Amino acid sequence: MTDPSTEPDDRPAEAQADGGPALPDAPRADLPAKPPGWADRHFVLLAFLGAFGVLFHEAQWYTFTTHYGPMIATGGALLILCRPTSVWRWALMHLGIIIEVVEKGPFSSNHTVFHAFLSASLLAAVAGRFVAGGFKPLSRGEIFKTIAPVGRVMILVLYFFTFWHKFNWGFLDPEISCGVQYYAGLRAHLPFLPDGEWTVWPSIIGTLVTELGLFALLLIKRVRVFGLLFVLMFHGVVGSMNHPNFSAIAYGYLILFFPVEGSGVMARRWQAFFKNRLGFDWAVSGDKLLGRLRLVGTVATVAVFAWMLYAAAVILPARDLPITLLREPWEDERNFLQRNLKNFFQVYGTLVFFGVYAVGLWGTTRTWPRPFFRFRQAWVYIFPVLMFAHGMGPYFGGRTDSAFSMFSNLQTEPGHANHTLMAWTPHFSDIQADRVTLLTSSDPELIEFIGDGHALHWFELKRYVQRKAAAGEGGFSLSYLRGADMLGVIEADRKTGRLVRVENAGEDPELNEPIPLFMMKYMYLRPYKHAERNTCGH
Image 1 (cartoon, rainbow, N blue to C red):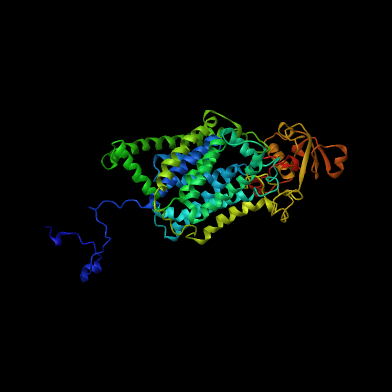
Image 2 (cartoon, one colour):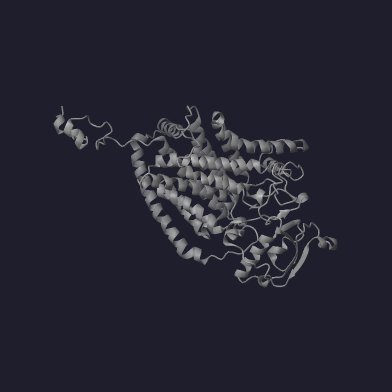
């Protein structure tokens, strides 16, 4: 028997002096390290799947070769795959996502804007907790418990708008409804679905019910497990059809809605599978395998850093991006990876759905983290408020593109607003009302908008001219009708608007009136479609 006098005394000096009891939680060097808790495991899953989502997103647009933000986000995601337990790599990836939106200005897709809002809120929550804790390092579990309520609320705000914006008369019009067109696209992938005129209204109502379900089923605790699986299946279908990047991002962040025991159950079941079916025992051989993986990860990390430095020093400074009126042209470029991204997502989505979510949810007691939606720091609520204001902006004269109104048929221009409940909201600026109809132009980009039933907003025409002029390409001519909504421009119609002819757009004082920096970087108005041509669009 060991002599007690030779054992180290872990008590404080005061306790040793008065013979007080030893502390029960005193650290012991000979004891094994404390196993990771549920929140630590959830964080690793969140980082790992989130990194794959970023890689799918960047593979779709390929802007990691043209912009610094996507390059940093892509590098951070690759570094996470090398070591998903790293907090700083996770933070680097999210920082790159924010820089991407700031760098591109307003020309970002809906899910990219959402991703930037989400990243900013998560990093702010972690930074606030770090400062409030006296700058003490935070564990992965503490970080997850801090960011999870924030992320859940941000996701619910997004899903709210996917339904809310579709509740308009355009979406309820069978002739132009995105619901009808999307169902037609779904039938192309799933030909066993019924066809015929009778499917028109079920497809419209079914879309609205589905979009509302994304929000409600995750919000209500009693049906949350079903809701989580429902949302995953929804994104699985959407990703297999047209948007693998958005769906891959969703597959990563829905881990925030995982029950407490989900990651632990998943890990134990896979360990049992490897041991019983494949004869691989993690308890015996796992450390050896992980050691080899760490070596591979170290080599890969060095390679990723080398690529990032080369891209920042050589590739990105040599970029030459053309100027366009709408989204930048890289969205239309297609290489092997982009052409097959939907196929890659089908494999990835199937593995994640069954290998992570289904395995972790099946037969568990489903204990939900607490608090589930309440933030640990009240000031962080500013982020969902800002995101909500961004989504509601179109109804009050703000930005109409990338305001989470994808495939909604929504119009908010004064006199033409079609939302069933918010058609008469006041506009705090006339930026949506001030529109032009192009008549002639020598600029190839503007020619595309002549006689196609669209009207450009005066703000967007000004921005385009000023960007072209800054690049030394503003010497084109154009004529336009300002202040009238035109389908076919005839002589009688010109009385309703102001006809303007410009020989050199780059020198026209009205078109080159300075635009405030915030407006230039944030405001983005999609072309106005006349009611009878308000067909489905992103």
